[in-house]
Length: 67
Image 1 (cartoon, one colour):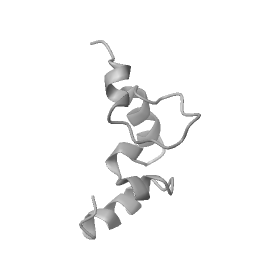
Image 2: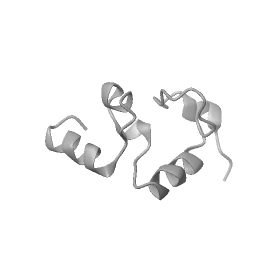
Image 3: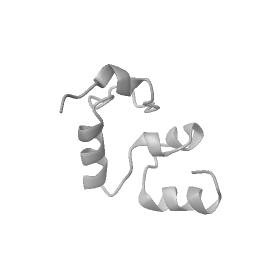
């Protein structure tokens, strides 16, 4: 399967500009899961900007109906 990085970037809301995984979803997901996190695309824009991508933060957002 070929990665379609340009198309993936259309939906990527990662605000970390030096990120080398932008648009390369398989690498991004692997990187974050290794650190017990979810990628930024799982979070609303304001929550993503906090850079707290922990499972716990995501669970709080889900409980509040925000994710």
